[in-house]
Structures are given as C-alpha cells and as structure tokens.
Length: 388
Image 1 (cartoon, rainbow, N blue to C red):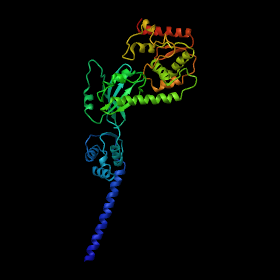
Image 2: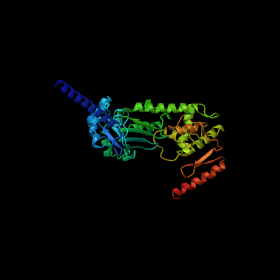
Image 3: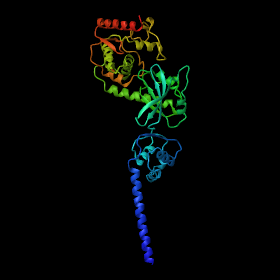
Image 4: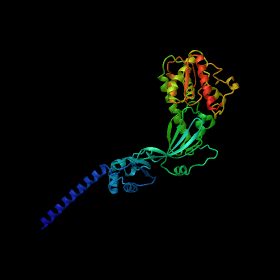
C-alpha cells in the first residue's frame, strides 16, 4: 500500500514538474514573442506609477497578451524597480521583453508632447507639438510668441507645463546675436535663472543648434553647452583651414564667418560670398558690407528696423567697413558651422562684388561695371515691388 501511495505521489510530482516546466516555457515564449500591437502607441508612465499599472495599461491598449506574464518577466529579469517615468514610443509588434526594456532603459522620453522654443534673428516663438506614434511625425497643436504685447498663452501649453513627461527643446537660429539669445531665454518659463550683464558670453560664441533641456534646468548650464559647442566647432574648423587665407586667427575666422552668415541665408552661396570677402581682403579693398555697419549702430541689441543713413555709412565706427580696412574688431552674430567652413574654404572665384538678385540670392560680379548693371536690375525689382 505504501509503495502504491509513494508511486502515485511520485507520479503526481513528476506531472506537476512537467506542467510547471511547460508553464515556464510557455511564459517565456509569450514574454519574448512578437506582441499583438498592430499600430505603434505612445505609452505614458507618470511619476510614481508601478509595473502593475503599466502592465494593465498595456493590456488595455492591446500591446500585450498577458499582464501577469509581463510583470513576472520584469520581476524575473530584475527590472521592476527600474521603471522610469516618461512618454515612450512602443513600436508595433513589440514583445513584452522589448517593452520592459523601453520603459526601464532611462534617458529622454521618446514620444508624447514636445515644447520647442525657437530663437530667431528677429523673433521668438514657442511651438507645442505631439508625436504621432503611427507616422512618427510631429504635429503642431499650439504656437505663440512669448514676447507679444497682447500675449495669450494657449491652454494647451498650460496643460503641458503641468505635466512631468513633456520634452523641451531650445532652437537657436544662425545669425542671432548673443543679446538676442540671452534676452529670449528670459521668456522661457521652463528654464530657471538669467544671465547677468557682466556674464554675457562674447559675441559669436553661442553655437546655433537644437538643445534638449529639462524643465527647471539652469540657464547657465545651457549657455555653457552652447559656448562649449561653439568652441569645439571653432577649433575643428580652424584646424582644417586651407592655406593662404587672409585671416590669421580663429577669432578672425569667426568674425568673417559671422559676416558671411548675415549676408546670405542660402547654403549654396556661402562659399561664393566668402570668396568675395577673401578676394577683397587679399587685394586690400574695404569689405563694404552693411551688416557690420548695422552692428556698429545697434551693438547687437534689438533690430535696426530701417535702412542705414548716410551719416552711419560715413561714421568712424570700428564696425563701419565702408571706412575701415580689413575686418571689424569682432563677430557681429553667432555664425553656424556652414558659414565657418565657408570662411576657411571659400570658392575660388574672381568676384569682388555682389548684390541681391530679387530671388533671395545674389548676383556676383568681377568688375565694377558688371556690378553697377546688377545694381540697376535690383533697383528696378525694388521699384516694382514698391509699386513705383
């Protein structure tokens, strides 16, 4: 009898072990297999959420087939305690294993709402946009100018500021001045602090680029990142300069690049514009460029908002390149990388003149007579535009 009982118990134990092993194998297969999600989703994980809530949310959205298997898998791989808050893009067909990795990996949110703070040459704007998880393209949902006199902050922006998973990005355009960047950042309510007057970076030393920032981060840290990025670009570009240039230092390169930046916004023209200024410097000619004169009038603060006066074109300002020889004493804006590269590797051309051609670009000329003819054409275009 006891042998029979022992035999039956052993049989039951073996069956139980087989079933358990089968269950483990099934669970592992479920955990690593392609998931049921048919279209990508944006999974929001609020701060303080646990893995149970995440698994239930995923199950309700059809991203996983078994919430319990998801939790057991996270526990078994010791990732439950590593859950991160944020908004995460979950691609279609993601396995439970892949989803656990996504929500525990850390780093910036990969989807959801993004606030883009754009600092332009003449204007600043805030754009709120959301990532469509299916197309993975951003869709604008709100926009406003933070310095508008009749400012009305969109309700959507207020809602976003109250959440913890929104991403923030600061975009600095090529050709901005240091003053413009610093003043604009004062309007960014998601960044703390302000730059004191005696701590202003030197003109030209803030790299135009896109910077991801965290809400509540310090403005000094952001300025330091911009400065470090520009220093790195200057060093790299100067080390790769061509021979025989009429510029003798990285500082002069930055000054020339800033003039190129202000003279054209067309990428294909930068090296041609650079060639004109290099040819003039090589021939001992004055640069005669309006943007430097404007900088001498404004000191990089604000926008001139009118044409230059004859008195300004004849002034003894160190930035008046109609009067002084060579380069002005320093940069007149923050140049982008492309303008710096053009300054140290200009096209080889015979041009020493250029003027607007009416298309947004410029007409280049080798002789004064050719240039004067181009000027006449430009004035005719201006007159037509002004209805004269």
